[in-house]
Image (cartoon, rainbow, N blue to C red):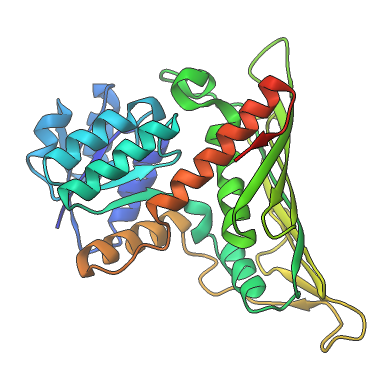
Length: 325
C-alpha cells in the first residue's frame, strides 16, 4: 500500500520514520511550508508534493499531521478521493466537525484512524491491562499528569493559537482524557480550573472528572516547565491496591497490593517492548488493521469522546461551572 504524509513538522517527521517499519511504500509528503516538505522528502528519499490534491492521487493511505484546524477539510477531501485516513489528535476542534469526518469516511467506505499515541506507550497499556484484569479491584481514583514547556516552533507556532490547536487543554491534556476514559469508562461531568501567565503562553490546568461508575479522576496538564522538560505520570487507586508510574523512574510500573492480599509487597513488573518507539507501534498497528480489515485499538468514537471531555473542561473554565456531558 502506498502512503503519503501531509504536514512535515514534528509529528510528520515522527510518522515518516515510523512508516519505515511497515511494508507500506512511503511515496511522498506535502506541507504548507514547502521547505519543510522538501527537507523531509530528502531525508527519506521520497517526493515532495506541491499540493495536497496531487499527493492524494498517488496514495492509498493519507497520514494527516497538520494543524488541528485543517483536519476536517483534509479528511473530507481524502474520504471523497477514496483514501484510507490516519489523522493526528485531536481529531478536530469541534464535536460537529469530528462527527462530519466520521460520517464522511463511513460513507466512502474508507478506514479512519485517529492517532491517540498514549494508548501505545507500554506503561499505559500495561496499567490498562492490570485494571481490566482486576489486579487492584474496583477502580475508584485516577490521577494523571502531563506537563511540558510551551511549544517553541521555529516555523509558525500554531500550537499557542487556540483557534488552530484548541490550546493546551485540547491539544495536550486530551491524551490523558482519552486514557482516563479508556481505563475508567464514560465520563458524566467535568470541572476544571486554569492559571495563565501574563507574560507568555505558559499555563497550567486541572480537571476533575466524575465517571458514570462513580470513580473520580484528577487530570493535570501544563505548558509551564523550562525548555526540554516533559513529564508524565499516573496513579490509579482501586479497592485492592494501587498502580503507579512516572516518567522520572525506569520503565516498569509498580503494583502495590492492599495489606492482606496475595503478593502484598511492591512488585516491579517488566514491560515488553519498552525500547520500541510508541509512534512506530501505533503506525504498525494502524497499517496492519487497514491491510487485514481488523478493528483499530482506538476507534473514531474514542477520539470523539476524548474531544468532548476536553471541550467540556474548557467550557468549565470559561463558565466557572461544572460541564455535564
